Image 1 (spheres, rainbow, N blue to C red):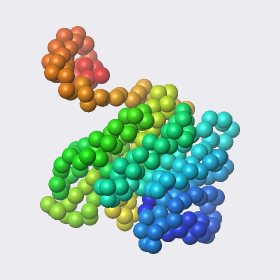
Image 2 (image 1 turned 90 degrees about the horizontal axis):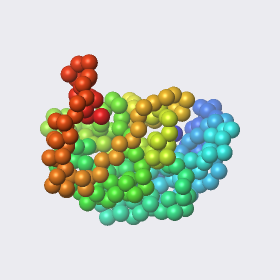
Image 3 (image 1 turned 45 degrees about the horizontal axis):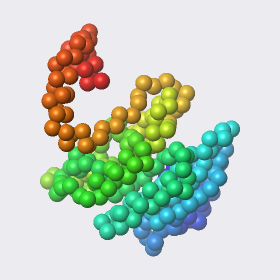
Image 4 (image 1 turned 180 degrees about the vertical axis):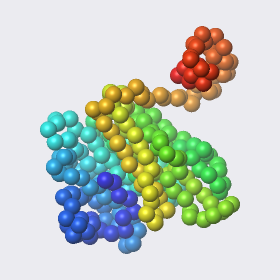
Length: 254
């Protein structure tokens, strides 16, 4: 479990867990006064903790499942609100690859960034510089952005009508190494219980068969003047026929 902006110290969080008699262990960055704070919780009977590195707003744990020798990095993030801090935050994420080369990632948290204008509803919708830098980091680190199956936006300003603003600030990013396996992956938004953020539950199951594979769309394709004409040409030439019109449409898209 990854917690952002927990507003308490790791020691206080450990005290809460002990009172609830939950067998979880904790590593964290303490809150600054009544703001911030980041923690990762895990069940030591199922997951073995091997190493910890902490950057500002980034908590990195090296884990492996009980009975397995394969290591995996769990990164909990809480992105900055201040634009001038975004670049350092992304650079610190990039630095993780140099420290742990070749180890697959699971990154989760509140990035406080959106990737496209479509991830924001209401307010001023404009292209920010950090969008491009965020997307470049995801591409360079060969990560896959896991879409939530029951909605897009994970935060709103809790206002109504025209004053409402909603954004996709929270997400999970997984290494392609994970996604390229025969694995079932699903992310789902769950009730917020009073917060202005909705948590996300990520399920990864290597026991199930899945035909889902990551599809990478490179934006430079759109800059080629022949791209759209070629797509139209290929669509018209396609001889695929399904049982119904919508089935044919699905096959041609695939």
